[in-house]
Image 1 (cartoon, one colour):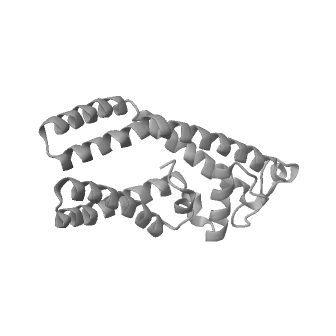
Image 2 (cartoon, helix red, strand yellow; image 1 turned 30 degrees about the vertical axis):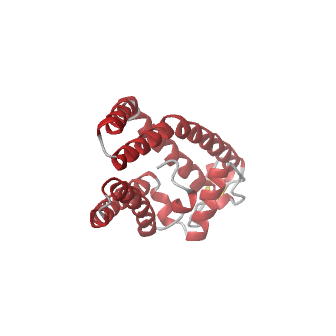
Image 3 (cartoon, one colour; image 1 turned 90 degrees about the vertical axis):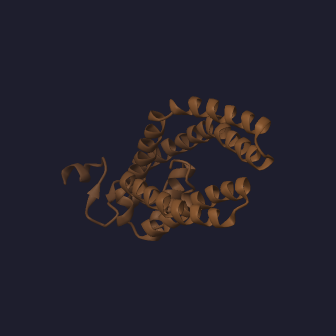
Length: 201
C-alpha cells in the first residue's frame, strides 16, 4: 500500500477500490492467460480476484487514513502530492492532514515489515518452481514461473529502496507542515498546532 501511486490515494473509496482491484485482477488474469492460454479462465480470475483485492485495498487505505475521507477531493490531492513529494502543503489548514497521512504511510510500512520474514521463503520456493517448470514443464508455465521470480526479486530489492526514499520525503513534508503557522483543521473547526493561540484554545 505504501507504494500505491499518489493519484490512487487522493481518490474516494470507490475509485480506490476500482484502481487497486483492476490492477491486481489484470495482473493475475494475465498470468493465467499466459500459462494456460485459456481466456475464459483468465476472465474468471479477473472477475473474482479484482473485486476481492479492490475491497481489501480500499478498506486498508481507509483505515490507515480515515481523515482523508473528510477532505474535499482537491484538498486531498494537495495533501497527498505535498506529502509524497516532501514539500510544504502551503496551507496551515491542511497541515494536520499532512501529518495524519504521513503517519498512515509509516504505519503501513511497519505492517509490511512485520510480514517481511515471508519474502526469503517465497523467493526460494519461486526459484525452485521456476527451475522445475523449465526442466519438466511446458514453455508457457516456465515463462510464468520466471515472471513470478522477477516480481519477487523486485519486491526484495527495488521495493525497499523506493519505500525508504518515499518515507524520507514524507519526513520532510511533516517538518514543513509543523513549521506552518497555526491554523484551522481541514473543516475550519478552530486553531490547531503549536502556536500560542492554539494552546490557549
